[in-house]
Length: 201
Image (cartoon, rainbow, N blue to C red):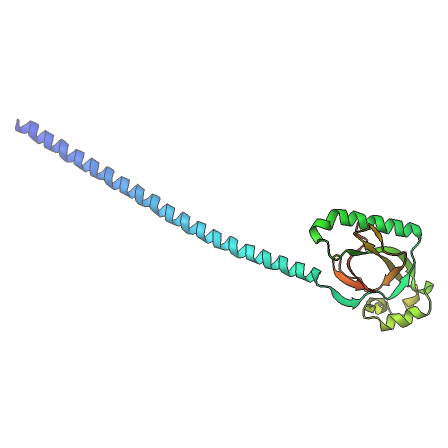
């Protein structure tokens, strides 16, 4: 009987020891899981902060870009008038329509006018008053970069003002622009406030 009791006691001790180890192991696993959850939460919060900062940076960059293009250049870009041929007008109007169809939603309805390239010519083909108007213009610096000796050989570009509401040029009269604005920039050409698109279509 004493042997059985002793055996039973030993079995109880072993079972208790085994249960204790199981309990410790379970607590260890629970602690590990909790630590993992804490670290995961910290990583998630850290990532969220980075995302917020990055989103704010992109928004600021976008705002700067948009404000840069929506702010009109107050200088008058029209140096002289010109008269493109009927075929040049037709091609320029088609380029402007193509541009407007693709970009109207992105740029918005204002201003309603576009500055679209229509024709090219040599400075020597223009009248004598052209050189006087060049000297007076605020936007003719690019013309003189090659030097006076080559000025008569330089090409100049004629542009039309396109009305996005009518889908046509406002007039067969165009304007010679020397200093080229950036595409999408809002500029003043004569008495028009318009978005410069150049040869885009």
